[in-house]
Image 1 (tube, helix red, strand yellow):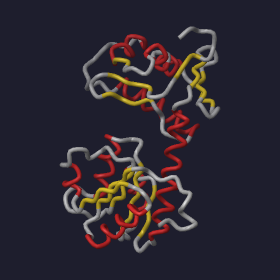
Image 2 (cartoon, rainbow, N blue to C red):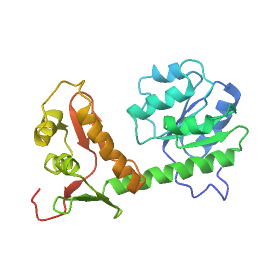
Image 3 (cartoon, rainbow, N blue to C red):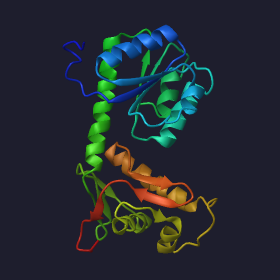
Length: 244
């Protein structure tokens, strides 16, 4: 049963634990199931990756010292397939640089063992609350003002844009959430359409994402679709008099 500190937490419906310590793994799983979560457990990262649905859970708790793929690499793989999941690292690994490395790999939070069950539950709640808020924010429309060359986030953050940024972003409102092919973006930019090994367009998108992230501090819904193009996974519309 949840205590007073954890009773009102917003917790994910599904969670996966990857830890090779069997007693610890099952003890933690039992505790989280008592909070109402559906919990899967794996002792080996390769067992998770070989599962029928390795990337479908809302939250992951990962140890770093694992059989199979190492913990940091597992986090990177998860992030490539599920950008919206929560990732909490709980490990006894105490080497220098561990905290920075796991956050760089894509983890949301790091806790060192030993750690209490209450602290773990509170950490899950804190991370998941932030994810839900970002998801809710993403469902509100972004505003693209091509005249003033600026993008306004659903929370009111204003990002100043360059000419190429405006050209790229102007392709997404008409797509209405669909994929904009690389060829379309290159044509609008007036650059030759090269094969998928061309990194020029990718570099432009990367710089645009970093510019938005620097202002908003949140995940940008502009995402790549491998070998196809890019998609803006949130409502975006023109914020001036230009029609969508």
